[in-house]
Length: 172
Image (cartoon, rainbow, N blue to C red):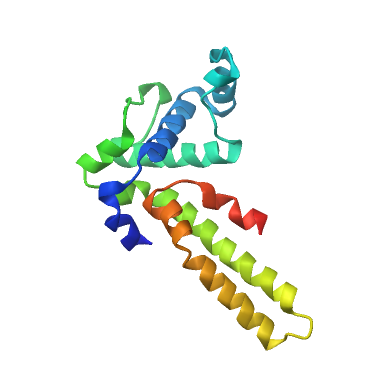
């Protein structure tokens, strides 16, 4: 997965990464609940509402943003002092720290992928268990391995980093 990250650098879609950083920065400045309220008040119609992050996703993006900002700028003593980075990923690219600064988010993706593989194994084992015994375990492992090496999941979580894999363990 790390290899895939480095190999796709020239074609990486960085808008989602920077979008998460932007939402996290704004949340650090105004507070978690106020971020939703302010976004709602600022939008005149549903088409103008730009905060498309569920609370869990916003929380993770905010924690990640705080970590990045402390790593780059030092400890945050006052959220009002946060410098505006208009495009986070370009800053990371200038410092040649793309992977290091995105690593916590990539680890969340990796954790979701691991949990999805475990859930897939348990689900398939459960479905094939009656009279299956060892066969149920083998089939569960095969399905978990297919999920782990699924090119779409690797691409979506590590090459074109998005957050779609976060829901997979819950579905399974």
